[in-house]
Length: 165
Image 1 (cartoon, one colour):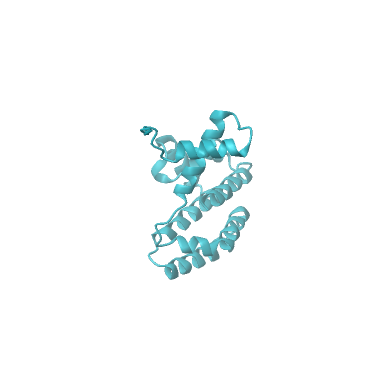
Image 2 (image 1 turned 90 degrees about the horizontal axis):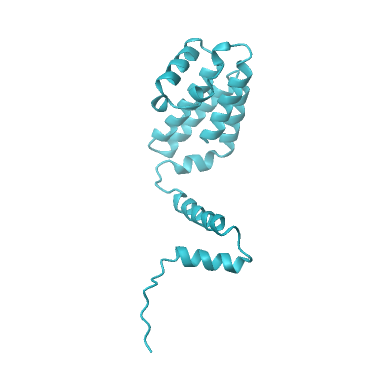
């Protein structure tokens, strides 16, 4: 979600840099959050914000959207999103409008995440381990060899088996 909004900010910056020289070499300053900016990036962003450019407005739209995750209930989050969406749609920033429409298409999933501690982190972790196995082995001859390696390295096998005869 944040990626769509960050892409909207970057597209806005690219369009506006032609008419606003203050935006030159500011890509990373406008794509970061305030708490992660370096001192130089913060100074550059403050110049952009003071100029009241569309890029700064797009940045504020993203920051406002992130407040959605502070909502306690799904109904509160839905009402917040609706207000945020109306503000973005009535702005004159086309890339942010496109990002807002994309987010609206995924609104049900976004709202369902509110109040839930579920994530796909475990699945991503497993996928990362499998991808590492494939990189280390430079590919497997067939799917059975890959399956065996996945089960061997991720199956928590105890290799200290005592054989009884």
